[in-house]
Length: 223
Image (cartoon, rainbow, N blue to C red):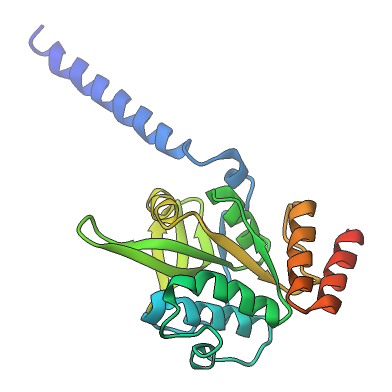
């Protein structure tokens, strides 16, 4: 009996470990499982940590849409320094002034990765730091790996910040769960919510970009 007991314990421990690993593998949502296993988008990225990296991220995404811009040229229209409290709304307003549709996304990982899989980088805000200090940071969600359960962020001074799905989801929620696409009027998002796109087009028209807004509505109609 003395010899059998360790074998029973070892078998039980192995079964528990196998069940734990199976549970971890099954933690990925069905929506994510349907996506390509690994995606990494290329594109301009401006490094920088000032103003929560907002101007750097916005300039990067504007550049990826073919707009000649650098972060330094955005400080004045974003009213920086001085208007840090309005930074998020000011970036949205400025993107519209450049004729882009600002399309908000649901605050869950499958919604974000679906857009990345379709080739669209996502502007996100997440909390960066530790238990002792944490602050908001804007970043570009540019890739993911479902096998390793990691996301790829272009954030701050780092072009390739890797975070686990769970760590990113937590930091993303703590940062307010804010994520948007900055799209040309003809770039319809994956699994588009038609009413949300039309509202975004109307917001674009309200910003003085009536022709761009009309193109966005036509693009949706041609789907």
